[in-house]
Image (cartoon, rainbow, N blue to C red):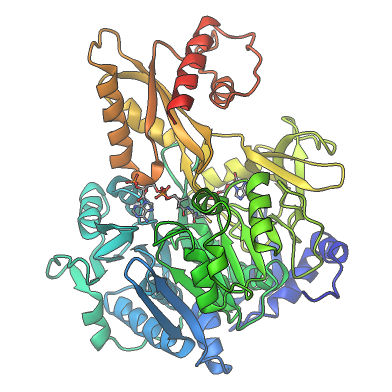
Length: 632
Ligand code: COA
Ligand code: AMP
């Protein structure tokens, strides 16, 4: 902690003089050409940061450190309990691998502006592939390995990749999952056909390669020539990351180069209180935004050592896994999702495994991805005896919106609250008419425009859908979360107020599950909601109404529905429960009463809406929801 800065001063400057504030932060990045304007707001509500600036993000994350004395420092520690291996890669070695892989991509015709989809497990090659794209100015889109071919195909159609990069398999605990058949199936399903794929062959599975279409990573690397960094505009896209919206079509969050590098670098020092050279561990997956920002880009931009962990908090081999990694590699900051701590707490409530390791290197635990419930906060805090920091953000923002900024001036912690809006974000609680609510009252959490650098400038090829975020309440970005400020000005985020749910820290759309279930030949209509659950925070549960005249066994139909969601979205959806009901509660005009159903599913108080067509249907839903909760 610097101990010099006052949070109120820093925050004030960030929101009253954003150009001055971010202009200073921009000095920390190495530019090929400095920006003409810190904030270009000539096309509201589309805002662009560092307009006119030119740089290369890979240069800043890799080459810069080699040129400035960090070549021998470890950049990546790959720790894989599932393969019983640990490997360390210095910045110099990383540069060599990235430059060569960029050369291999170039050899396949990939140039600035092309898209490349990366579908890989948690191995260092995933990071090499990401950085190689950034080096060429190509736009990467990493797809989480837990998604099924259908979800991958949707992303292929939208991103239109020239090349896809994958591995022969992923390893999930004790399961080895061959990736190539998933990749092939996705390409078969997709309308857009990528010209080539590059496959990293892992010893556990050998993927069959189609000559002229699939290329072996190692073979390419043998002959690839090193590619130089390609200069891009600050406002050029760096990546697309698809995230769940309220419908079946995911949103392609676009990230630019300049604002992203500036914001992430700033956050490392001011939010996470780390120094270059520290070991920073985000125990997430490269397929999620946390992985993009805090496994790959931020730690490397800041000259830290990042950990690529191929394992779970429990079962690989036991609930001491995290403590082992921290003590073995001298981790200073651990960042993960609360669900990981709930899993550890469940298996090791008294911290017996923790006692086996010396984790004195650990200074902070940061948690995000879902609400940090006070029980988990207190348990983690009692066990670790270090600050446990809840912080709130979204794929769209790419870095924290609210946090207790450890590198500025820490506030006393309040369980259940991510503390304050981070400098750069003006967070307000609004009612349905866009009017600001007083402290203590819950409403829609919105951020006053412009969003700070690093946040999405738009959605990939979909400016129109981006406008949904920023036109519902003019002048604001609507987050989709509900929450309030308490009397002391602490922000509380209580959960989504739309049809997005968070399952074990994974963001999913109930709308996309409904689209899948509706395709079943016996289903007339359905609705899916997130039900509170002790370990994963939420799990999806469905209510399906069958077509008139269907006499098949409802239990068999439920099994089929569960399998359909697993096949189409992937196991990660955790859709395991569905009730067959006679009807869904509707208004007289035929709209499903979703918010009432959501409350019933979560045993919350509700008022019977005056517009309801048949109040008796609510009792049916109540009984079904109770049954589902008992089963869960
Ligand atoms: N590839 C293939 N399958 C995957 C996968 C991947 N990358 N990730 C998850 N899955 C599968 C799992 O194997 C599981 O399959 P199953 O139904 O056949 O058992 C299913 O998807 C659900 O996975 P998950 O929700 O992770 O449950 P789990 O019981 O395996 O593990 C936790 C529970 C809490 C240990 C785990 O969810 C966890 O570590 N969560 C932290 C989440 C996180 O880091 N989020 C990122 C935001 S910070
Ligand atoms: P994702 O885009 O996957 O990062 O998910 C973003 C959503 O996760 C947010 O809109 C919130 O609903 C939830 N979320 C993330 N972090 C927190 C947090 N610290 N507290 C409460 N909810 C959170």
